[in-house]
Length: 385
Image 1 (cartoon, one colour):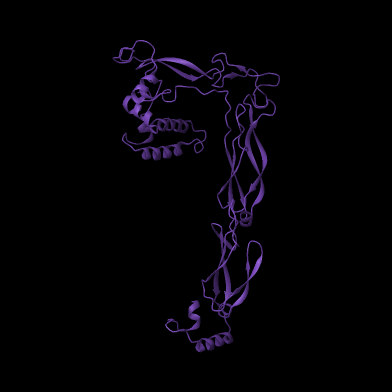
Image 2 (cartoon, rainbow, N blue to C red):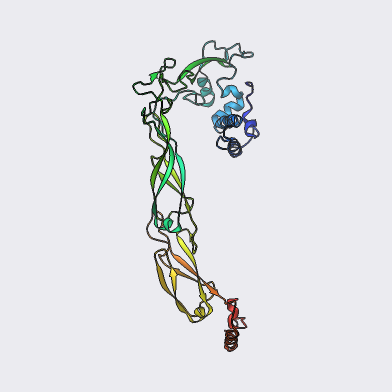
């Protein structure tokens, strides 16, 4: 095993016979623990984060995992055994003397074809690359969520430098092709391994894998070709959106590389609670308070909706907890047709402080009241308790 390189199962904290699901759970736990966003400027955490990513890349791939289980690091790490003897193979493999392609050997073992463990090809450093997605948030009212609205938010995104137009080179100059890698961004390296001499590719150390060299960097961006800039964006929030849902604004993320498209802006919507209404999907729930007399005799009451107040007749004998539906008075269905409904729950308010005269009147009424048979009630007001 290479010096200081830990067993991949040990890195994730699982046994060799762990299932795919156990490996995945262990990776998520470890990656979250050492994620750079949670451990800023922590070199040790960053190293462990890379280590667990490397381990998961191998153990989550059935073919790579099989190679690792059978051959150890020699099956997945091109650096294994570099500069060391091959211990009984004499620098060759099975009698072969010349340079060999490790990918061809393992392809014959496992039926693969097209490179070995991702080392068979190289990414073009000058190819267009899409920019990163970025995230922001905005808070809106209950009514704005129900009806839709437009908001202007300020975001911070990476854009092409306006001075060098993204080239990274000072005005009047340009980047030149790296003479070391000839613009490929990678160089071929031959290494002696346990299986013979293997040719691999590594990022070019002279240009840092970019394939080009900037002799005179732009003074504004320092040769990066990118600058971080704050800008305002108008967001169209559709009617019917709910709390914690996301609006995606295409093309407003970080700018792309080498002419690639920009990423997207993802805006998390936070909806303030309403003082009277509650939301359930696209329906609205509302508690309407009425008096005992209104419940007993019936009454015309005003009910607030998202649009305006409406008149609604409460029938005589309405019971506490009765619910009435106002069809189509709910919330606009998100990207759909029609609205939800509004459900009005009746709350009968029982007076807490009465005068002696009021108490006498109620007592007289309660004595005169004849409850329905088999109701189990002793008096009229028992039903409101």
